[in-house]
Length: 423
Image 1 (cartoon, rainbow, N blue to C red):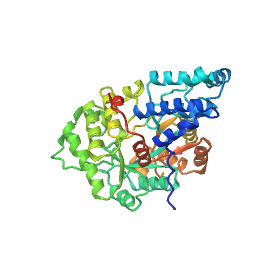
Image 2 (image 1 turned 120 degrees about the vertical axis):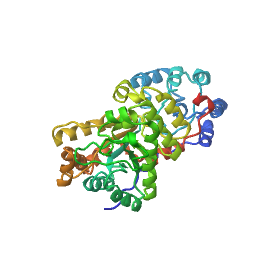
Image 3 (image 1 turned 120 degrees about the horizontal axis):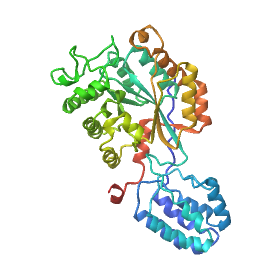
Image 4 (image 1 turned 90 degrees about the vertical axis):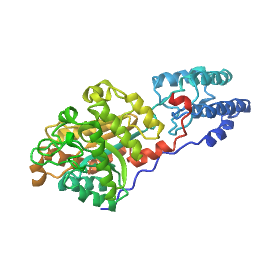
């Protein structure tokens, strides 16, 4: 099948473009030009990596009178998109509330729109900023697990809907998928860092020699069966040895890596394992799957995230590594129709920012049935995320598919943070 073309990146607004926009803000009255220029200069001097919409708003709505402005802001319900006015999809600049208020008040007094201008200084924090744009990484886990999973994951990638996949290096069918990845560098491949082997009669051991990582294996020499056993038994220094061996093996097979993530969340089960995970991302200069904000439900499910999450976010930010705004995955649904409905509901209700939807592809054949009781669900994921119906839904919802490589590039294209932002 023909390779899918990656979506084009969002347009950027540069500092020079902002400076040149200032005189335009004067509109039909040149008296406002110096103020707009001074406002832009103050903002550039205190540049920060956060999206803002206020400058474009000034340009487009400076002539509104107060009654029109209040009506539009009220209609928008205080939302950051400021319905009907403007949306800037570019990482521009940030000034403090005090600076913006003082400057905007001078402009507003001249043009009778105090409330309008003051209310649109909205900080949209997020990996790419929480404007109205919705980005989605459709991510297939468990490549390398079996031949069935490999073929289904490849089908998803070549359909153009699955935008990313991650590989389980310890698994028996790793080399098949690694060979495909080496020959198809246009796609997006992560390492599904693996510390457990969960199937009853289909097990695997570590990539590192067992004598170097004895805490990672059970009495039969396999990786632990489940995450609880991993959390109870492994030593962090041996985990790091094993995971480096997995990454190095993938690199030696010629896999072009885009990111790291964690099989079954095992690396989120203890704070010291989270530290190992982050260190690997920094050392290999690879993004790691991590949320910018850890809410209560996520912290309860993954206790290792309760400590140090904020510090880790700051560290990843400082190194220019992207952070997700949202993650979704579904294991339930008794029928294919129910699972399809759950996925489509999630897509339709996708919030602004960058989300990752995690799926597991497979073919419901004898091989996969002999490994897992999830063969039918994996086959369903493949069918859903290679279908024209799903493609059309994404288009209708104006959701932009994103790869981890594109995600990182868009973050790299933002202006650098000021020291104040990293305090």
